[in-house]
Structure formats: C-alpha cells, structure tokens
Length: 142
Image (cartoon, rainbow, N blue to C red; front, side, top):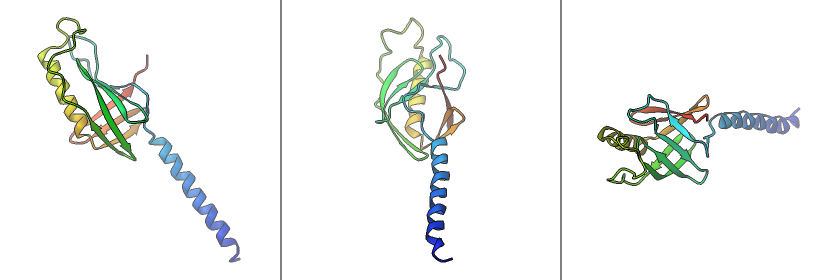
C-alpha cells in the first residue's frame, strides 16, 4: 500500500498542474491583437483609443488623436506600461478639427491611466486594465 503513494502523489501533482494550466490559459494576454477602448466615440471623428502589444513587450498606444510607441510588461495578472511624453503638435495627417483641445487633453489622460495601470484580467474576449481606475478594451472585430 505504501508503494502506491509515490505514484498517487505524482498523479495528484500532475492533476494540480493541469488544473493550473487551464487557469493560466484563461488568463493569457491577447498579444498581437488590436484592443479598442470600450467607450463612446469622442466627436468629432470616429477614432477610438486602443493598444496593441507584441509578445516581446513592444506596443503601440493609439490615443484619441495621436499614437505613441510603448513598452508593456505582462506578468501573471500584473501590467506595467512605459510610454514617452506625447508630442506637443497633433499629427499632420489628421483631418481638420479631429485633434481638438479636448481630444488632446484626453490623449494625456489615457496615457496617464495606462502608465498607472497595475493589473489586468480577461473578461471574456476583452481585457480589463485597472489601477486608480478601470478601463475595458475589446478586440477589434473588423
């Protein structure tokens, strides 16, 4: 009877690892996906903030009227975002009136939110970032 304990122990550990790997898969970050902020568009314009993160941590933050490179570190349920200051001038390719002072201020608010995010979690196919506030990002569907 004692001879079976080591084998039973191995199966118990294997079962725990298999159960844990299912939880890890459910919490897997959706790398290389365009994630858009789940919010109403800010007029004028249809552009929505989003984030796309590569497995190596390189990322692009698409804000209300500007885009900037970033570095994102994902570990378990934690997230750390590093991004440079926003350029003072709006992008030249934006249509007239799209980068209003309100949208440019919202760019900085979104950048600051992402810099302050400390945790992430999956909510179905969406990703929730949290810190001082919580924002939901959904995968782009088109």
